[in-house]
Length: 174
Ligand SMILES: O=P(O)(O)OC[C@H]1O[C@H](OP(=O)(O)OP(=O)(O)O)[C@H](O)[C@@H]1O
Ligand SMILES: Nc1ncnc2[nH]cnc12
Image 1 (tube, rainbow, N blue to C red):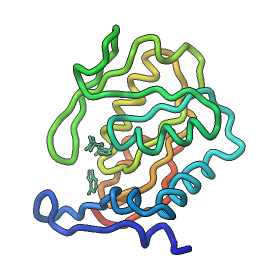
Image 2: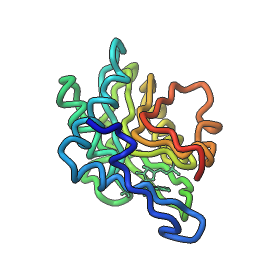
Image 3: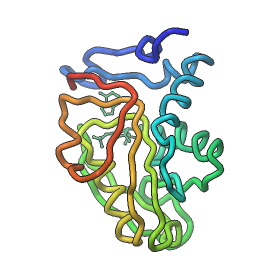
């Protein structure tokens, strides 16, 4: 089997000059790539005591649900603004390009629950920081975040100091 890095197609200057887009769809559309990505992310949780998996719309859903299913944990979706039907908590944050608001149901996390966040990629870390804000606001404890890919050149980890952040693939640049 090829290493996981070989399943990621990188597209220079997308969506704007200077950005190298790390395309998760290239991993997903290969059966071995998909298996490997889920297995390697899940391995990062071995021996960890936690209660729920949280994942953000939309690429966080792709990896969060199979991991939650395999480990028999609930999956809590964090959605973009205006999608959830019941009472929510929300957080606004900055992206590498633009701003966004995310929401989570108010009853999704119980005080004291140990939470794992799963997402495809960390760039600036803004999404993760906003998710932590929502989870902690409901009394949850974020015990680990696992990413498939990390763009280390954007220093997302700097704003997540004190948290356990782990990535399967680390790219040195942006
Ligand atoms: O570290 P950050 O700078 O916050 O960027 C990373 C986030 O950006 C992407 O999601 P996006 O909001 O583009 O939504 P999508 O998954 O629906 O494409 C990606 O899936 C991460 O969630
Ligand atoms: N460079 C990048 N590649 C893929 N997804 C991203 N999301 C934010 N930056 C990205």
